[in-house]
Image (tube, rainbow, N blue to C red; front, top):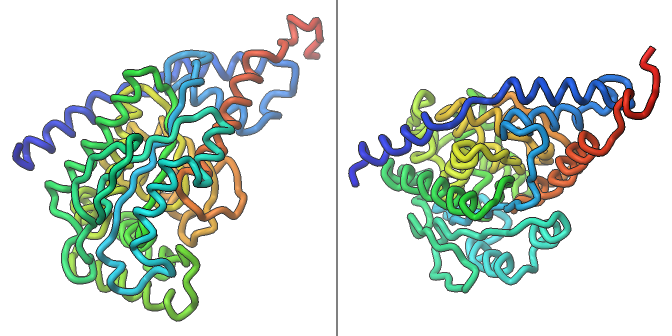
Length: 355
């Protein structure tokens, strides 16, 4: 299939995304105002209920079947010494996910969510009965020397994310979270954010895996060099993603688009996931109505990244692990919102006067 045919398929899926159901959201707001509390006193919990109604088109959607899609990929830019951990950690952590031993596995079990681990670009041969293998590249190329991916590879990774989400939705999954693993992916995320949000690398490059001051300066220079060399076009999100991005970021763009196309809310994790959300928002503006930002990462630049999309985090726990951990934690807040809306008495049913 040619690049043009791939992109035509992607465009058709984007155009199929249902519009946000303003009527359902309004009905949820009206119901919330009738509950035995001052209007608006539950803050974001009320807003969550309205957004879930608007996204799904249902006043009280059943979101009990949920999944966190963990996309894994390696980055050639690791050659530049921008991480505190070697690239070999990526496949090792993927096996940890698959064996249920990572932080996201623990939190997903608590939240009643399935962990779907996808090899979309790991630079190693991986085999496991629970692995979803959609390998597009064996790690990206070094973006400080050349484009990280071709345009065709990038669109293929996006389409893989869409397909995986559609497969999950077909089995009844109604709620998604984004997760990722890939040593070097905060470097790619900083580069994408710098280009699409028009921010200097000094504002977007953070400490990632815990690098020291001298490596932070070097990492910032690497991002500057990659942008200057590749000249990604800020008006073309796919071009940006191809030149300075990563396969797992592209896969998450597909997850977000796929969730919206199936009328499913998607909870966005930290810095890398929000970078994917920024790309998705530029490719498919309707996806923003389906996104809920889980938390404010401790990674520098995350707040400005969310501002560029128009998202507001639900929690702030100074986390910067990734994997989908913050997004899965936020599932509990969505559950709380729906239970409040369904189980609280109204003023009429409780016989309480509003005046």
